Length: 169
Image 1 (cartoon, rainbow, N blue to C red):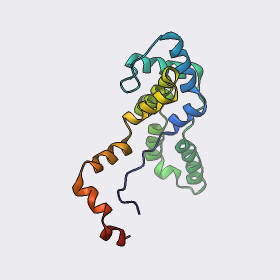
Image 2: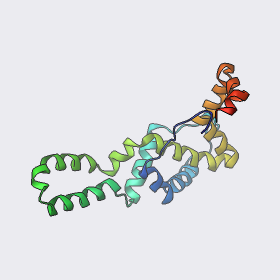
Image 3: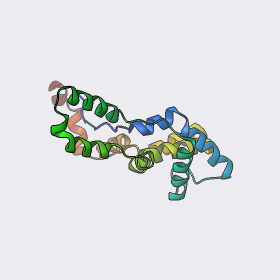
């Protein structure tokens, strides 16, 4: 068991799908051609207009984006129908189905924070290469922040190093 437990940050399927299909890469290339320079990696942020441009870029280019939960709902509906239970839960099922049936633009808004980090990282990489990308990524690294916080707090840090703590494990 680790001395300090941190929660994992999970990425949305859409964020990953956009990465796998090179949307961030392609958008960053376009951005690089249109902007001669950007702020330093430690301060660079895209604007709302930039994010809107990315949204349009994705919508225009098109992405095969189908939620796993939607596929599961389709299978679940078939199972309910086979078991003769669908009519009994139809209203609730359709309400849940409607919530899951959001469009791509809505999901781009919903997962904006994850997607923005990918976009910014890709853009910074074009201007400052890997060193700049690493500097950018460290800027908002929650694991690094927690480690620094721990190192600056002797009351929490020293007990971790003690012999008594090692024997408990």
